[in-house]
Image (cartoon, rainbow, N blue to C red; front, top):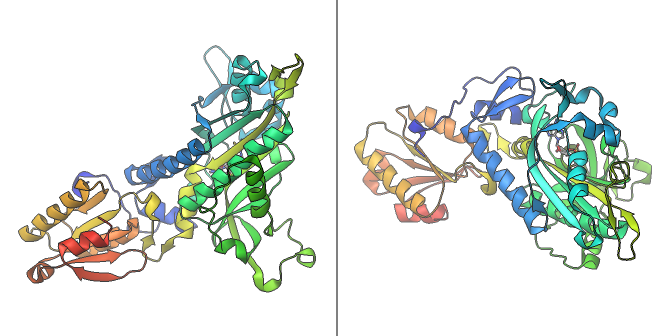
Amino acid sequence: MRLSQFFLPTLKETPAEAQIASHRLMLRAGMIRQQSAGIYAWLPLGLRVLNKVEAIVREEQNRAGVVELLMPTIQSADLWRESGRYDDYGKEMLRITDRHERELLFGPTNEEMITDIVRSFVKSYKQMPLNLYHIQWKFRDEVRPRFGVMRGREFLMKDAYSFDLDEASARVSYNKQFLAYLRTYARLGLKAIPMKADTGPIGGDLSHEFIILAETGESQVFCDKDWLELDVLDKAPKSPEELQSFVDWATGFYAATEEKHDEAACPVPADRLHSARGIEVGHIFYFGEKYSAPMNATVTQADGSVATLHMGSYGVGVSRLLGAIIEASHDDAGIIWPDAVAPYHVGIITMKAGDAASDAKAMEVYDALTAKGFDVLYDDRDERAGVKFADMDLIGLPWQIIIGPRGLEKGVIEVKNRRTGQRDELSVADALARVGA
Ligand code: 5CA
């Protein structure tokens, strides 16, 4: 992509309304624009990252054997009356009336709708277990939407739902999601800590929140430092027994939110206890028959008897993750994207506008990288070098290639690593190799 043909409305000034780094940086980097309180337009750069995060979430759900579908954003109030949640959900729910005076709502979550779909098609124990997910926009009329995409009113969520014959099998579904969550966050370059959690309006008695550490997190959390050293991607439990031991192992490390932490009773010695702010990037629940019983989601068993389905639900805050990743990875100059979700892998800057040799070399490098399948953003604007450097640091691509007449005379171009700040003058071939091409 050539920047002169892209739409990247970066801001020089720090927007006054943004209190935390990720919100400031997403606005300044031209990723999002607020359209109403807690409701954002995703500008091209922001959308590219959102799509990459979504793709990793999707791959890990598919890997765990969860099947994708897509449910609508608008739901009928009657469905929520069946579960008894229509009145309970209160003011957070956006209620809508259509031209026929039918009561609708913009879905804040989908337990009722997925239960309705499953009960209408699934009649026999032979169709169990069933694990389904979708990635869809949600609306919650939060009292205080804030921190940009971190606590929005409209936000993108991956929500999965499991249906099983009994509690033991539901536990296997839960554990598969638990593993998928740890893998998802690790691939996004995040250290997520599973913590036992309260279940709130979703319900049930088994639940874990996945928290990542960042200075601006909404809650104070405590955890065993040893957890932060571990790599979960090298673990591949397969059988239900292996999976259960994995979950037991992963939840065996001490981790607690402020409300649950008790210094006197804490089993971890002070020097191994890490205390930090945390951001909730996912939440999983097992709630048994809470929705299936009132909504009559049952199957016939082998002996002819009727079993009410055991359910769980599993949420990832896809749009919130962008804020969380930036909170965990930025510096004074801007965002530092982990490779896995960077909107482009390399940015090319020419230092002297109108210099034909620089322009030609930039196109040569651009073509070479593009031919190898890399996403490249070439800043070909007629701007001062200083402006281009600042914008490139701000948008945080992992690598920068800087091309100017002085280097070209020596037969070199410069490669800068955004994370370490290291800059090296290299031949074109070495520069391509340095960025991984
Ligand atoms: N039905 C369940 C799981 S599918 C559910 O709704 N869980 S939740 O309420 O915990 O939401 C799941 C995730 O969505 C949260 O962990 C959080 O990361 C994200 N989330 C929740 N509210 C918001 C919000 N207002 N803005 C951005 N992300 C949010």
